[in-house]
Image (cartoon, rainbow, N blue to C red; front, side):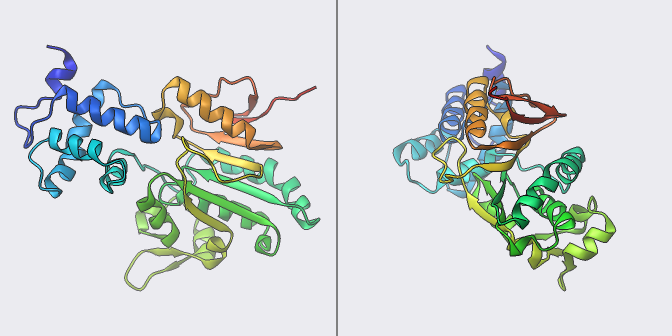
Length: 284
């Protein structure tokens, strides 16, 4: 018996779960999002999807897979995606990116904006909002009146539930610990019921939306910065190549792509501009 078969038929499981069930769910997830589930993830799939099977009143994973296959528009597709996607994030994660943004990226962009130009930044995989709000705080520290100009941050994720969380902008005390005290007092307010809410100045320059990176992107213009960190690690190599190629096509000539610490772009259109930072290759 293979390791997958042994792992994917737990004898103490509440619901029957076979290798075929795992592969069916993995295939559905891959087609919907580009996320590749290795065989070793069978236990994770069982633990997360068993809750959905129970909530739907089904008796097995086979019944669950049959439900998904029978109706491509069933809302459970979104629920499965939400259950299986990982949303581990924090404010100012990988701080060298925000230091680079403040010191290298923003000065010419601020000058362009003050001269009437357009500036666009994208958090592609914004999760619960920690990343785009970190971008916004970095921007407003350097450019307090940014909202008066054509400067905006687009924040998107495949999971509508985390996008709603991000849009609300309410976080607990543990979440806001990485934010320096002076920035916390400037950009967040305490909620009467507990927790912290982002200031309107941050929300004013961010537009939130649901975008599947594997599908058509509605944006037509170029971006001066794209943050997509710790997303590509969940994709196989062909999907990573396709994603980075599309990012290159949407990057402004002097723009920067920021990716996660364990990710690398191997496409020729992008060259290193710092630690996990990329720019377009010169055409000359």
